[in-house]
Image (cartoon, rainbow, N blue to C red; front, side, top):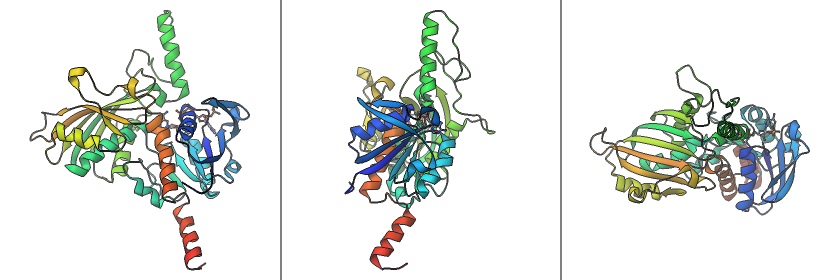
Length: 359
Ligand SMILES: NC(=O)c1ccc[n+]([C@@H]2O[C@H](COP(=O)([O-])OP(=O)(O)OC[C@H]3O[C@@H](n4cnc5c(N)ncnc54)[C@H](OP(=O)(O)O)[C@@H]3O)[C@@H](O)[C@H]2O)c1
């Protein structure tokens, strides 16, 4: 931990992810000296209450990042695109939750237990993956490192909190409307989400996939350092408030039994195996909500692939915590522990200045 408390900015502090970030910073006793809570001009002067403490919100503008060491962004892609470079230019290290920088080759995209070494080369911005990718890659890493991966099929069952505060309110409103026999108003999603399943998350791309599905493909490849990984995804929104679930089918290079897979999964930091069909024990969205781990269960052979090279399983995690806030704070902790809070270029300047006295 650093020898001084840090100035930490949370951008999007009134949102569901921003509020969870503040909560996680407190829970993990992150060394916060000053906490700067930023949101749009609409919220400036308002207060948010987290864990019994009240904090005032200021508007996110470039000057708000003067003196900031770490800026946790979760205010959408446009805000990150515009303000993250200003924050980085002022010496802050940005950990960004939006998709704005994830596939930029100069920006590391990092899951704390999968590729923390990639933090080394950041130049002021680090990207936090999409929540559906986040919970998938620690488990795929265990397969990559043991028997190798040929192909992955992922179908997601994603909660409404993944869309944000408005979507939570929309599901609540539709449940109430249904109970009182009123029509279900849909404004956030194109159809009612209550008592439904929507195979449309984010916009449709020319290739027929949604942007959410394609994020799982491209982000997994980058994080796992498998640029040719064969992966296909169907992403579905379901009427659950918190936690995403995923049905995953993997074709492995070498044989992998379910018993060995459970053992390998259980060894990944932050992954918990819950797998006892006899007692109806398997990962559940309701139980994962509020937890930081990735839960995996229903591990079984996929008989459609020969030679014990097919594996099927179910992965569940809290999209607001590990899927967003907890990983972001874990990355900040890793940067501190490795003394990489400064951008690589600034670090090198400091090192050469101290060590060799060069300009
Ligand atoms: N929800 C998830 O599971 C999840 C997971 C991973 C990543 N993310 C990403 O995290 C981001 C936020 O998601 P969320 O679920 O927390 O959304 P949300 O509940 O809708 O909150 C949005 C936040 O962004 C702020 N904001 C909007 N426009 C702004 C502007 N022009 N300048 C400054 N702040 C502005 C809002 O402030 P006001 O209150 O002032 O409008 C609010 O604090 C998105 O990029 C999302 O893709 C979300």
